[in-house]
Length: 370
Ligand code: EAX
Image (cartoon, rainbow, N blue to C red):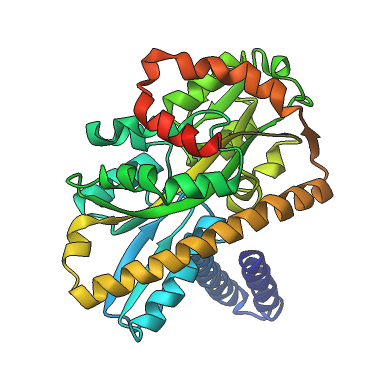
């Protein structure tokens, strides 16, 4: 909006300059007027570009000596970034302003796979990512796909018990030696299907639809089992692909759809089928972490733990408020018989090509089937 005002202001100023021209030196005045208007317009564009840039970043306290460069694929209003702000507030307070986090938003540092590589190489300090790119990130993390299975976690509570317990901590430790230190499980949320064509209530309704998934083979196998055509794509490309119709739909939690990427603007239909409980992971470059003093490391870990719980609470809230906001926006949201969808996706558990670790799955089931 400010950009529009700047340009409107400039054209009004230019008009007033031209109006006060006139007299025998009209051509000189007109030239001067045009030049002035062009300078003003250029200045407005620069300001607007700076403002746009500012929409891609949210910097921490300017006086901090230690600044962690953190990236996500979402807007500032998303649960990830609201969680990072909560984490940052604790970090700044507990370190007396010595440490802060500069947020780079909406895939401005690249997609999640790129950013995970950048953190491992130390060219980016921090990242909150979904589990999407993790199985393919390293041989050490190849068995993370177990967390991406359909209908694995029936409740938030069972997800937290597994992720904060033995299985989750073991998986986080698999990042050791990759250049990435995985600090803990944040929350992406329960992933639902949106599309631009029709109400989806039963699994068969998905037949033949091109549905964007993350570049994750378990998610792709699940949508293939439902009869859809899974189309892997980075988050930053999804809005325009939906707008252009090169894909029919996508799947994400309400928080990512509404608060993170405004996908409701191009997706008139949504199905609350909650196929995947999708964890997220807060990562820091191992070299960056090792370069901190013991006290600074302690503060960072404590602040990250507080941020984790706050982010999960924010995301759970967005799952409710996001649905309400989307209904008010006019999105048609269909509820489903989840038993039907569980039945339609259970074959994925037997797909040997997905490299699911049976021992890890058994440990998870021991919690979720209690
Ligand atoms: O992690 O790519 C996705 O669909 C993710 O949910 C998103 O980037 C947030």
